Length: 233
Image (tube, rainbow, N blue to C red):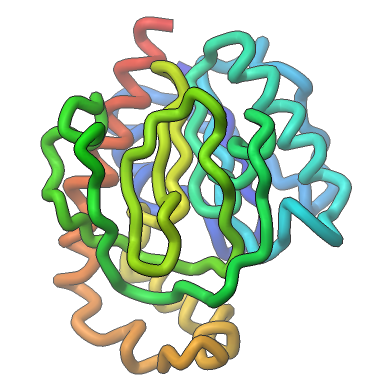
């Protein structure tokens, strides 16, 4: 199984999701478009793609490679290829599906929970997860739900936190792949961004081990779905 992971900034790799996918036999190939590495227009050489996070916007002042990612996501949706978007990646998938992506009214940063919708109870990824799902947030933009998408999660700040398109594409506005290393790195890299939202560096690092463990059921569910979907592709 070959999975393409598009990393949009150096500090946002796959985290614990990479461990799960590799242990399931997947071969992960990273592309780093922010370094000038080219992106394919279709997933001809891969069984799936993961679009990762980053501080850039989809809706304005975006680097040219974001348009390439939107095009790749649109092609993957058309071809019914397994596709996962995390944070910025979820906004890219929403844009590829024709939905509006826009600047939000406030930043959502740090450890929190999202509430799963009724539709999540029958979803292949979310059905076995708690209705109040622990996550890590790091964004200030949001999106409208794409036409035909299944709404899977919301938060008090932003209603559209997760969605599924058909059986092959998921968008997660939040992060579940965070481990100790990523949490410490993001606290350093995005500390000023968090502080502007009233979130201290200390709160981002408090109880780190238990908070990262709380994310494991969700990231495992996402990873197992992706592996299974690749095997059936």
